[in-house]
Amino acid sequence: MTEMELFVELIDDAEANSILSFFNETPTGARKKTATLDQKKVQIKKVFKSMTPNMKRKRRVGGANPFYAYINRYLKAVSSTGENFFDHVLLLRELEKELPRFVRFANLLLNFPEETRKNIEDFSELLQQEKDIFTLGNEGFKTAADLNDFLRKYGVFIGEEAPLKIVQLILENQPSDFTEKLQECKKLTKNMDSLEFYNNKEAFFEKYGVPIADIAYVLTHPEEDQDILKLLAIEALTETFKLQNEKISKEVKDKIKEIEVDLKDMDGHIKTKDDEIATLKSDLNKTTKNINLLKEKIQSLTISNEEKEKQNEELQKELQLERERLKEIQKNEMKALHSNLEKKLQALRKERDALVETHRQEQTELQMKLEHAEKVYQKELEMKTLIENERISCFQSSQVQDLNWGIICVSGFEVISEIFPEIPMIRTEDDLPSLLKNDHIQSVYLFMNGLPTRRFRKIEKEIQKSNKTSIPMEFESSKEAIEWIGYIKTMERRGVKV
Image (cartoon, rainbow, N blue to C red; front, side, top):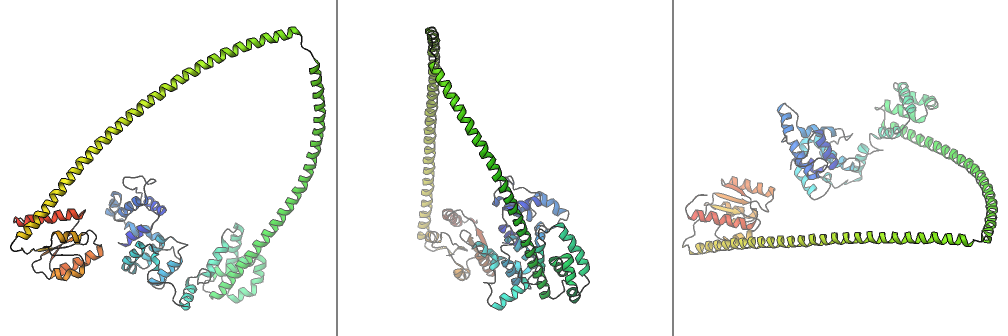
């Protein structure tokens, strides 16, 4: 793994989007917004390797290395630099909560490029083990003296940059008039030494306030003794907290007074509403009495026979209309019921046709699977016949022919060595000397399945030292490897070079 590949493995989705936008690239076969993080990483590696059409054009006209052109933005991400590589690694480890790991790795690579490249494999192993890569080379502080030295150099509020960091904390969210007064005060304190500032500090405090006066001296005298600057910065911070507490206390007291006034106004408003409610209750009682009187008058009225007959005729008409309306409703309901039944019948027919089609497709699929199984069985039968013939041929041979090639195999070693016991074959590099001492062997086939890259490179170097040829081979399965070996041996017996 290269330093570029390790950086890409460390990035998150937001950083991946930032890189693609920086180079105006889109993942191949996907949209930027819908692509997965892995798809984005594949495209980013192509960009950093200048393999995309866009990057190829830029590199032809003298464009810079895209990887370093991008990560240069993180050179100043850390304000301090360790005295050596491992000192800087420890510093970056302490910044875990402040900076993402890809930013810290880029900063380490830019400040200590050679040392970082030498330790790439160790970084990769820590990443594969899901450990913090910045634990490389240290397990923390071994002594209190080591911790104290580190804190003096890099501690946030006790290190060498503590005065400036405290000042930055104070300057956050200050009003514009604070900044204007600070600039004015800096001009006055710029050419003063500590004694002159001390003799005039009361005047400065009265005109500008303690925080502004102390901050002005800290910012204009970076070469001053660090303990003096820390004391001034702490005094400014303490006074700032004091002023803020006084301001907050005053605001709270003013708010309490406003609430008390509002409560008094509310009490008066409630009393007014109570009076209105009492008046409404009195009016309601009067209205209720009037309603009761009207009810008594209505009950005392009698309805004449003529009015009753008229009412009866009107009721008969309403009854007839209601009967006709009910008939019309029943008629409409029958139509709707018939329509629903017809729709359900059509749906059942479609469902029946779908079931028939599904059954037919399943029958076809089963037939295809059966044919495939028969082909697989036939192929396995042919394979068994080939192996059996190979064994018979080996045992019937009066003299075993020395082979000029051997095999290094990790995956499927037991099966392959049992089928071809006459082939020089090993599974680990510990057995490699016995294979390389065989003068008949000119070529060594390395089956890559299950063989790590680091072991492969080590074995390949040993083979080359013995003036033999190493040939890496990739197979999808042990079965495919057995078929290939059988084919090679068959061709050799027929005198055909492969």
